[in-house]
Image (cartoon, rainbow, N blue to C red):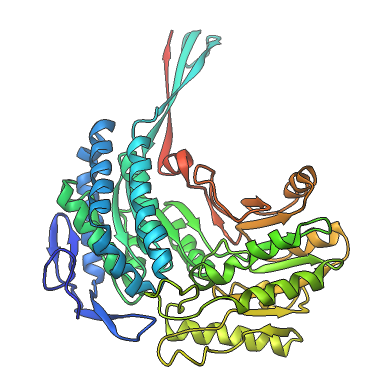
Length: 492
């Protein structure tokens, strides 16, 4: 078993400023590339989850009354400390997630530090919105006159932050940093598959001086601790990133106590390649499904919806691109495609590939396991062509290195196919005519649309429509997500 970054002999929960062993023991975290044990995570109990929520409730009053400068200073200290310890965090994140060294060193840890820093600055953004005075006539309730008013953003309270396995500390910092910046307290519940770096991250935050109870962490291999937080009367808001099925369950339970919800759920990104698109650009961007964390990303353009006039060219180009991708050990710098998170998830992906074949799709490349990788949960980059809109592989989120291609004949048909799933997180439009691309984007039923690029702008409001979620975060919108608007009026 590995030792923790903090030098302790075991990974521990943090509840109300006290480090604790898991109430229900520990469970093993397994490296997806080697199938070896990375470390033993605490198996938190339901009682510990409830205690963590109570601790956050107890800390809320004093934390919410700290000044923005105080909160900013601590968030910046966390950013600085994480950068100092990047060389320690990166190997742990790679071992837990199976991400490649390139993704680990450029995206997983540095982006978490960047988010801390962004919301350190965000804590200083104005939280009061001045409103024009209004002349009001006398009523039976009160005398008339000029009535002044303002709206201000107040912290929601205690936030349960629950995240997915693909980007464990980046996604978590994207929740806890804006929540803390606005004066909320948090209970952190990382994904069960890879919680160790998040546990260490919370330890780091404790070390830089966040007060007791402001940041708490509970972990577990089952949904029990997460469910306890969603049900807790001490939790005011649930911020969740993960599957649509779990998000729907959270919505049901949280709704009983009228909790605020921020749900970033599944995606089935459509890449709409119009007849006037540059095929090379489209091919390069769509193939990012394979090259970026083995397709385990909800924003990936996994559905290539291609005009029939360039359909064969795009399919051929994607097939050639897949053949140039190196599958292997995530620690090797030349590796582009690593494993998927668990053996069970690999089996799920393989089930979809089989369904695609059975429903009439053509497996152009991939479809199996790489023969040279004797250990690890690898799936070959897979391209399924000749798909129809109603096929399971076109409709359902696979969350793996699989691209499906659907032809269309005219713009309206292409847009209808793109909009024809339950998801609406991130879609893409490819056209050399930027005016046309912008016009088409208005018809896409998605929270985000990329025009000729899969690059992100992190200041945009991020979130989905339909079954892809509720609410928006990102940039200043992330600050707004963790606040309640309070109106204040007075006589002029």
